[in-house]
Image 1 (cartoon, helix red, strand yellow):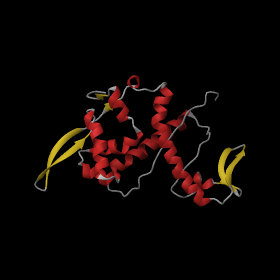
Image 2 (tube, one colour):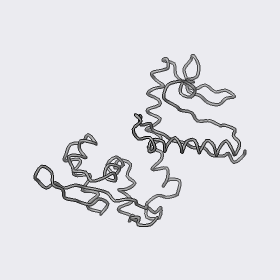
Image 3 (cartoon, one colour):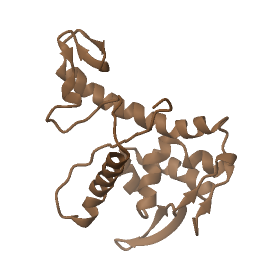
Image 4 (cartoon, helix red, strand yellow):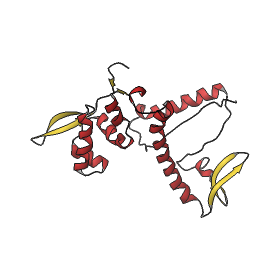
Length: 204
């Protein structure tokens, strides 16, 4: 990618640190003061300053001065884009390199799903195993609302048989939906965590 910042080993450790992701996301969006960061991240000012200084020391974040209310305020920003080579990380394999970023996000999403699941089920929760696969539920049956219900929530892991044309249409529909907020920015919307994994089986 042209004009990309290529991370060193030291920079890569911070850029890929899961606990720093909220901070990095804010600083990539535009310059923020330490007070701004503390308010957005619900941290005390000392903690916000400590974290942003870690980025400054390794040249991930830059310092910009801005006049606010008649005084000079230090602002911090992270330029973009960054390319973080697999080779400069300490990952033992490509699987662990990718997994270290993906797994914590999946675990966080699963915790949110389980919060809804607990509210919808009785005290005797468990899995149901049948020809349809393995499904969460309770002793009354499977928690089908997580997949087929009308509430604004969707969770399932399973198998589906599709033609090549259906796969292409599904991808087109999802991409179009994801881009729709940019074409209709004034429409009120709620932010949803979203993950899609559609992989052909090797034995198919």
